[in-house]
Length: 200
View 1 (cartoon, rainbow, N blue to C red):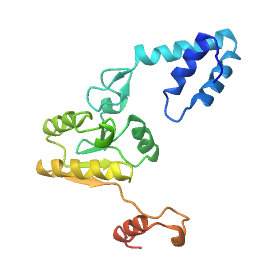
View 2 (view 1 turned 45 degrees about the vertical axis):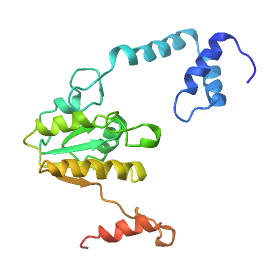
View 3 (view 1 turned 60 degrees about the horizontal axis):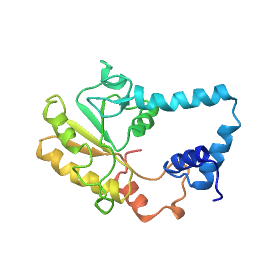
View 4 (view 1 turned 45 degrees about the horizontal axis):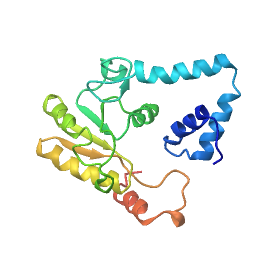
């Protein structure tokens, strides 16, 4: 990459730290920002600074929040006997959009991946077990992770620990998406669909 003035280089380097953003994309972002009117650019920078000053982590579920307890945890109409454990805060939004789940949440902060140094002590696993111990009303823990190697590994590890505490550990149902052709389904997806079949 050719040499740019230091402020441009610094912002390119900052954007390049984001997932999926390489140096070329970062440079496009910087040039797009430079085309903004000065007032909009200042508003953009203030919005970024607010992430650091105004956002904290919910004491109960570990998602991002403006208050010590997030809006979902503060909601009194939530079902208290179910806890949905997700990998990242954004997963809560995805599940909430379905309008089906009305229980509580807990954010693990990632998935187990020992090769990359993500071990149980790096994640919020200790805090999860503390939450389980301090919530006698809980009967079911839903492990809502992506169906990949790391998701399955994390699920198996947690399920054993949860079951030891006398709680029911469940996972999301998996199978064929609507409109899918059997011909193109992989063996794992088709197997899950067969195992999880229901009455018509």
